[in-house]
Each structure stands twice: as structure tokens, then as C-alpha cells.
Length: 107
Length: 114
Image 1 (cartoon, rainbow over the protein chains, first blue to last red):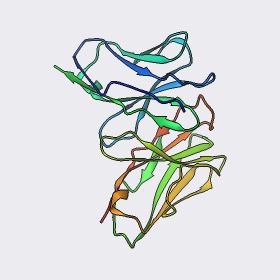
Image 2 (cartoon, rainbow over the protein chains, first blue to last red):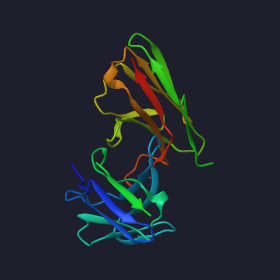
Image 3 (cartoon, rainbow over the protein chains, first blue to last red):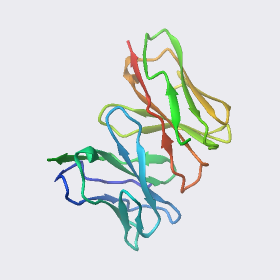
Image 4 (cartoon, each protein chain N blue to C red):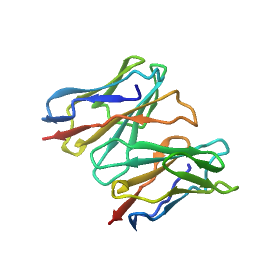
């Protein structure tokens, strides 16, 4: 089973770039890596998805090395509203969310 | 319309009650999911429906009974629940049940079992 490992929490300040790394050593050949954001008492919201190399959209970038055993979510210039829990999800035999990273952005 | 709706938003029920949670999407998605989320924990997958058929049951107790009446609607019937079943119940949908699917989540139903 692909199990993911993320830091439990991270702190940052407004305007900084934040990088959150997820380890997934047992990722299968055709699994995608997906990141979600969740605010308290809300459902997770899709941020970005990738298979290999680099993917960028209007809110984030996702870096995936050649061995695909990890991935890094990059949030440029965070704001207070980016304070949330971030989950990486790797599809294995079942859809298992990692424990999530609580990002706290301070003024 | 990229929205998944869930009703009710909040539900309080006794251990002898029967209640149902409802989820609806109009994105033409053919896969729908139920998750359970306890406080400060990640969502845990309960059920997956693909093309209106139950594809995955993650060994969920029989007091939770899912139903997919049509491709847009997903229900979760609750009966004889325990206090430890109190949680946020999330519904999600995706284009189909494949490895690259993006899931769209509803806001959840906050359930309290007394």
C-alpha cells in the first residue's frame, strides 16, 4: 500500500513561499499525486495534481522527482487565508489521505 | 456547476433513530464517495460507487447503509449508531473511478450521536 508521510505542521509569514513535501515510497507506476486543501468544517478542495516533473496552475506548483517517491507542493507568496490543512493523496489500492500538514500563516 | 451539495448540514440523533444523509451533484460524474472525518484527522474512505454500483466498502459496519438511486444522488442511511460515530461525513464525486480522478467534495454533514 502506498503510504504517505507529511510534516504535521508548518509556520510561515505572509508573502513567503511555502514548500510542503510528501513522501510516498510505494507509489505505483500509474498513480497520480493529488493535493487538497481543507479549512475547518469544510470539505477538502482540490489544489493540484501531477504524475511527474513539474505542474503549475494559478495557485500552486507541484514538483515530482524522477523516482516519484516524493512530491513537493509549493505555495508562492502565502496569505493569511492560506492557513489550512494540506493533504497529499496517492491512489493505491484504496484512497488514503495522509495525516495532513497544518499550515499556519502569520502576519 | 462544480458543486456537490449535502443535506442536512447538521444532524443530531439518538442511538435508536433512523436518519439519512443526502448528497447530490450535477456535474455528470459517474463516481461518488462517502468519507468519515473525525476531528483533527484525515478523511477516511467508507464507500465508493462507480456507475451507480457499489465498488468499494471499506469494511464499514452495517449500521451505515449506502444507496445510489441514480447517477446524481447518493444517500447514506443511518441506523442504531453509536456515539463514536459522531463525525463530519463528507461526500465527493469524480468523473469516474480511475487513478487520475480529481474529487470534488461537498461541505459535509456534521453528525452528533447521543
